[in-house]
Length: 462
Ligand code: BES
Ligand code: MN
Ligand code: MN
Image (cartoon, rainbow, N blue to C red; front, side):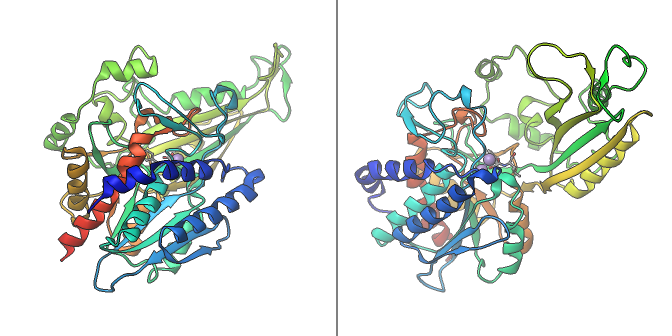
């Protein structure tokens, strides 16, 4: 690729301004109050894709938020890259913990980002990373260097489990036909340690409800004599892990892929400093499943976590009460071979079984998806590796991530192609948290690296 650096330098300010414009729209898919804004974001993405050189950009309606689809075909004999990303974002709350408003993007310097980082909800997950692909396309089309055909599929429901994308993919197999899928919606190890994500965990997300007496009771008059749903729920949740922090649901580990000694030794080579890790989170010790390292616990091992728990009186002061109901939202991160629907069933059966007499339990599954692993000898991986080699001067490290993008396994199943996860975020970029940000360096480095992926993929495909 010629003149990438020069082009980026010349247009850097506009690239940032356009992203900032996109970040100003609160496209919160989980909250129906923002419906208009989510739709407006889809329109803006459409306009930007057209400007970047995509032909046939269309807003594809679904039962939920639309999918923005665009393509540019230059030669039927050349390989086709399908880019996936999402324009929706997580809710920004708790708002009071943001140092600047979540939808009023500002660029500030930080220790990790001396060149500055854009602070806004969605900056890293995923507007900033998705938009790198739009700008990379602009560069390739304006300088006549696009070496592959390209298709874009940008959805607006990723943060709520992509309920309609699966249907769209199944119904549009021919339209979405491709040779490789490219996604930037993950992270890398550090600014000077490039890595390519080779695995994602699966997910099963459930909500539980424990009901005791038919009304809230005086905790003095009834306390000690009837089951307190909050006490019971706490006890049930606590019993889901044993003393070694293994999950106690029968059958939970049956299909878990166990990595070989060699694979684990390979993983342990990735740079990681436990002291820095603890310091960054202000914790005095790490915590997790016995027999596994921190990096193993958060990538190759399945987990169970309470994401929210409520019931009873949580207002100011004290109220003496035994609540009628208690609730929790629980997520299980899964690893290859674990089937999320099967795990959801195992959870439900177990949770109902351990409920003591005196309460009833209701388990409601939310959403889920399968995990994903991708080999490092595929053409796509090799092309990505060469691209990073050029822009970072280092071979990227393959690394499995703990996060989930459930649609990726469906892509493989339905479209029969491999997904390459070229993420440019850092774990410290606070995605889903207050003060989410994305490094200006990372944003521009992404725009520089992506065209090289196209170049090497086209070369390797010959
Ligand atoms: N982009 C993230 C997933 C991610 C982040 C993977 C960093 C690897 C590294 C995605 O937007 C996300 O948040 N996914 C959800 C699951 C989804 C079903 C709501 C997740 O992982 O919690
Ligand atoms: Mn994302
Ligand atoms: Mn996300």
